[in-house]
Length: 100
Image 1 (cartoon, one colour):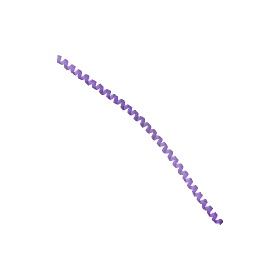
Image 2 (spheres, rainbow, N blue to C red):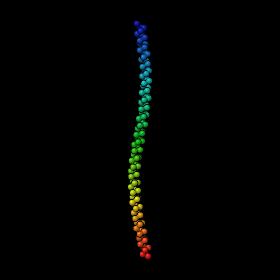
Image 3 (cartoon, rainbow, N blue to C red):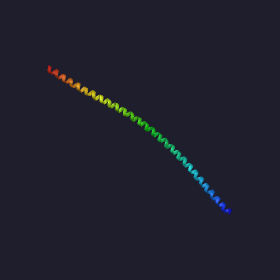
Image 4 (cartoon, rainbow, N blue to C red):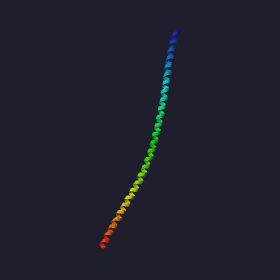
């Protein structure tokens, strides 16, 4: 009977040692997971920062395009005025030539 109890206790002791080994392995795995998670968090924060920078630059480009668009419209308007004035000048020149 004592031998059976001793065998059971030894078996339990071996099981406990195996469980302790498994727990140490899991603790190591958990540390590795935490390290990887921290690295991913840093990468995500860097990507978020870059995204914010790109969004700000995109907004700036929208404003610049709108400004350039306004300037082009003004240039077209000025060019139309130059064309009208030039046509009027040609008309005046033609009249002056006809008077000669």
